[in-house]
Each structure stands twice: as C-alpha cells, then as structure tokens.
Length: 264
Length: 364
Image 1 (cartoon, rainbow over the protein chains, first blue to last red):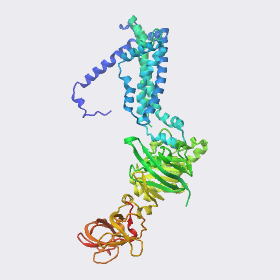
Image 2 (cartoon, rainbow over the protein chains, first blue to last red):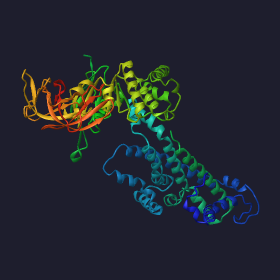
Image 3 (tube, chains in turn red, yellow):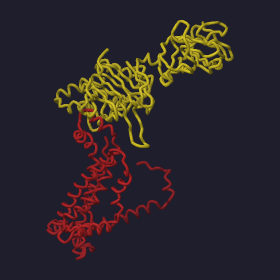
Image 4 (cartoon, chains in turn yellow, purple):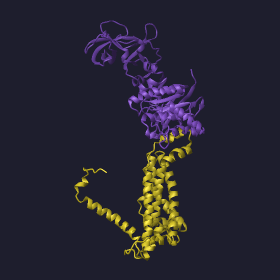
C-alpha cells in the first residue's frame, strides 16, 4: 500500500511504538490466552510444554458440550426470529415516509445504547411479573430483542442503497408483490440479511449478562459455563474453550464483513 | 382515424392532504391512438410523470378514469396491465444477466423457457446488442443499458410502452442517436409509445403528437408542426422555441374574419379563425423567423414600424432587436442570403412585416 506522506500522523515521531503498544494492549491477552490453551500444565499460568490435550478434554466434557448446545440453540433461534423481524421492519420503514418515522427509527436502534444490566434486570422483572418460567425460552426471547437492531441496521443500509424503481420494474413486468419480493428484492437484500444474521448470531453466542439474569437454573449457556469454571480455578481447558469460541466468532464476523461487501 | 388505445377521462391526482395537498393532475382528458408516438412535454412538476405513472398503474387516480381499449384500468395493479415501462434510471435487475432481465417479464407470463430465450435473442437483435446476452448490466455503458431496458420492456409485446425521460441521463450525441433509435423501434414494432420529456427539441423530433402540459393541465395536443406553428397558449408558444409576444385588441377585419389592432391605426389582418370572447387586450405571439424587416418608408400592409436597437450576427442568420412604436421590443431573425437582404444597423427606422398566417392569438 502507498504511504501518504502528507498524513499529519507522521509528524509525530513516536507513532510506530505507540501504535504497537496499543495493539499489544489490545491483542496480547488474547494471544497469551490462545498460547496457554496449548500448555501441558494444569495451572494455566505456568508453561511446561506443548499439548493439544486440553482441546480433547474440553470436547469430551459433557457439561461444556451441553452448555455449547444451549448457546447454539439460543443463538440460532434468536437469530432467525430477529432477522425475520428486522427484515420486515426494514422493508416497512423503506416503503415511504410516515408520521413519527424518526422516532420509530431511533427506537429500533435504541437497544444498542441501553446498558445491558438495565435491560437484563428489566427483562427479568418482566418475566417474573407475567409468570413465565425462566429457562432457554426466556433467554431466546431476551436475545431476540437485542439482536433485532444488529440485524436491522445492515438490512436497512442495503435497502437504502436500492433503487425503488427496481420493485416497480418487477411489478411492471407482470410479477405480483410476492414474486417481485422473491425474485428481485430478496436476492438484492440477501447479503444484508445474511450479514445481519451473522452479527446477531455472534452477539447472542457471546452474551453473558442477559443470559445470566434471565436464564434461571437449568439453562446454562457457554459464557455462563465458562464463568462458572473460572470460579473453581483456571485450567487450560478454559483457555481451549475460549479459543474455540474466538475462532467461531472470527469466522462469522469475517464472513459477515465479506458478504456485506458484495455489490452488483 | 386509428383506434384509441389509452383514454384518460377527467383524471385528477392529488398528493397529501390538508395544507400539504398538492394537485399533480387537474381534470386531464386525452386520447392516445394505436401505433402512435405520443409525447407528454412540460417542465418538471407539470404532472407528465404522474400521468405516466397512472397509466402504468403505479399510482391511483384521485378522480376520473383511464381506459385501455375501452376497458377501465382503475384498480388493476401494474402486473395485470399489458403495459410496460422504460424507467428513467433504467431499473435493470443488477443480479441478473442481460438475457435474464429480458426474459423476466416473459417468465412471469408463464412463457416457456425456450420461447422466452428465443424472444430475448430477437429483442437483443432488435436493439443491436446481440452479443451481450450473458453480460451483467453493470458491464454495459449507459447507452447500452438504455437499449436493454427497451428490449426488456418490449419483449412481452405490450399494447403500450411508457418511457419516463429515458434519454435524460445520456450525453448529447448519444441522445440524438437514441432519438432516431426510439423512433425506429416504434415504427418497427408498431407499439404505441407514450414518452415523457421536458426537452422540447426531443419532443418535436420524435413525436407523432405532443401534449404540452403545465401545472397539472394539458394545454394543447397536436402534431409537432401544429404545436410549433399554431400555439394556443402563451405558455406553449414560450416553452417551445422562441416567440415574440404582443398585446392588441381584436377588431373586425376588412374582408370578414378578424384583424388585430395595435393602436394608432396599426391594424393587421388575421388568417386565424379566432374564437375568443375576449376582445380587448389579447395576447398575440409570432415567431422571430416569421418576421422580416423592410425600410420604414415603404408603405405596406401587415407592417409595424420601429427602431433597431441591437444586431447580432450568427452566420446562417442575423437577429435584430427592434423596438416597435408603442409596443416594446421584438426579435426578428432573418436568414443571411447572398447579400440581397438589406443590411440594417442600430438606430435605423424600419418596418417589421408580419405575415397574417404567422400571427397567433393566444388564449392566455
């Protein structure tokens, strides 16, 4: 890549070392976490030799697998529901101006800004008040809510960039509303929907606070399980599980990013 | 006369409500005939695109109705009308190939794949892009996309083709080419074209008939020559080409018919059969190229006198600005011949000759 000499950043002599320090601060803990997942020693912090045994241990830990399965069920359900809702919302919002549109727009994105603890407590109290039994279902409901804005934003951005006469052209060429949606709108919206869904999936998979509050006893998701493990004592098994979660996250975020770049 | 294909009957369209209410179309009636190149011409906001969208079914009329071959279209959605549209932005489907774009409408009409493909080839041939079927629309130039949009809209053989300012995004040279191309396609396919534009030159060059629109109303409908030479409204005379406007009183002509008096005995006979209730202070238009200048001393009928205030030489012709006595300035455009035309200069007293058939009394 070409270096832009006119960038005022280069006037600051310590820029390279500062930048390196910053990135070290950001990523070194993660690098160490991954490195120690290959540590032979039971104590995660003392290096004695290389092994992949902890991954084997982790993957044969039934409790961990159950938690992972719970997380997967929650993430998939919340993602599917949130993405469908977000797609419908985005389609509706793009159909034309209406009274209170700005307000509705803002409220759609608001869950991104509300402190998670507040949402968690409010949701818990709400569930208790209406008498729903806490468990995976309540986690799915709560996750769906905060996944909607994450799914909504990329879909809306896609729609915004779409020529409204494309739908009209489809109608003009004898496609009824449903066919126009299926043959023109949906294929063009697809990258946005997929990108939004992947983001939702990661956000849900990763969530601790809300799951912890509204999950109740039987419904342990992966982050809650890891938290529980740490309280007993950190073994490289925790590192191995974390490293695997990180891998999944990176894959999903990268794919989401690449999909969102698709342009016709 | 050929058959009426589209008939708009007292169509009105308003947008919004209350204080924000905008009348886009105000009681418009017009008939469009089979196999005709019909143009709706007017400035932006005159309602021409709204009328087009009503015919296409993208908007619903607030009052009145539109008939297609005698059948009311009122509630039919666009996908049930045998009418296709070329959109201003072309609106080619970016995720489909050129061929898939063209077969889209055929497929929706449940035409078999092989027939649809054959038709697509035929259409590509028609718009002279036979080699481009497997390309993506984004790989084509603006002019080529325009042709594909035409091919796509013509493929299902609609009864009427609507064109919403399709040439406005093209550069001048390409636009001229496409004007000829459009006219050729219309003649070859025999499909009725309804074309919307704000470009008067485009309208004159291509149309069989033109409807000139202003503020939601159709002011005049007629062949290009009729619109240019016999404008009925001041707006029409002004919007299409250049015009001089004078004011005078209608009086009885010496040989029957009407004459127009510009005061102080300056009376000019009219060829036009004027049907106007208004006699005093009527608007009159005359094209600059229909006026000519002579020496003021030469006595001649149909002539006003004035003083030359400005002369501009354009090569093929010369434009004179003449301040008419008691009337104000007019522009006279005279062709430069072999020098036989007398040359006039600033300050010269001249006579401005007005041929009776070139004078038009306007409604407003």
